[in-house]
Image (cartoon, rainbow, N blue to C red):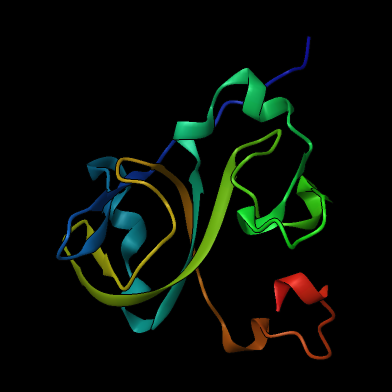
Length: 136
C-alpha cells in the first residue's frame, strides 16, 4: 500500500460565466497580506474530478487529446490524469477583496480545492527552453 501525505486545502476555485475567483478559507485569510502587490500568482490545486483509481494509475496519455500527438508519459506533459492529481496554473490577479481573489482564468474546475498560492516573480523565467513540437 502506498503512503499518502495529508494536505490541507486553503481555499477553492469558484467559476461562473462572468468570472473566476479563488475563495480563500477564513482561517488562511491573513496569508494574503501583500499579495495585492503582485500582478500574477501560481495556483496549486487538486484535480478533484479525476480522483479515481483508474485515472491515478494511468501513466501515459495522448497530450491535449489530439490524435496527432504522440503517446507520452504523464510526467512529460500537463495531463490532469496522474498519480498525484496536482494542478498548477499561473493566473493574472484582477483584484483581491477580503478573502476573494478575482483572477483572469484557470484550467481548474469549479470547486477545485486550492492547495497553495505562490507569487509569480519575473525572474522565474527560464531562457533557452526546449519543448517537443506538440507542445508549441
